[in-house]
Image (cartoon, rainbow, N blue to C red; front, side, top):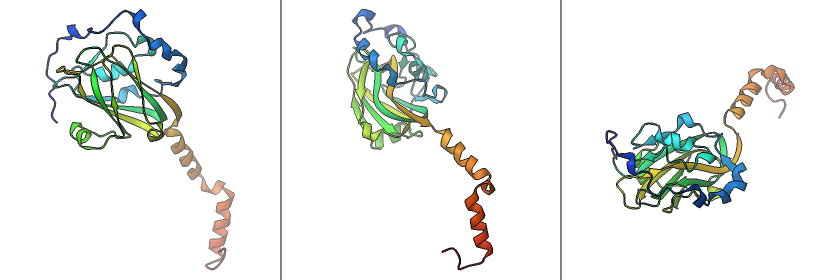
Length: 222
């Protein structure tokens, strides 16, 4: 699918569905904020296809929990209603749920296809491949927490989110996107440990025994 990025959209309608903070029911999620995955996201590496403004996808992910109801920045699709986002983590996480805030009008996304550890998808591949899980989203301007099947996302280092359609509008609007789960470890740590162990093999006593056996010739040590 080829998407044009030269469309000029009027952003004056993006506030539809917004309401006073006192009507927001997401305060119920506050006790579980310790499981919010925010610091573990590599914001500078987020890629969003078909966004009407550069880096808008990254900017809504960068919103902190207290900023979740802010009407700006907003991610708006460009050539049509579809959006494709790749969100990398700094390490491995166990994903529990996706947090999304959209709106009560037709620009709210409806079908979200989630792909695990696929960082090279385009719209054509996302349409053809079997997603890890398909989520159905609601038309609401509250933050909705959409659980995933935890058994499928226990070793997550990258999420690709394909917002396939919406509730009837020509474009899709997203105001907040977050994730909840458990951070397990940094991706770089195991590699550094392996290199360190391999750097000085003579420091390890078992290697000496192997060398001695080799010097004795074949037929020994089995």
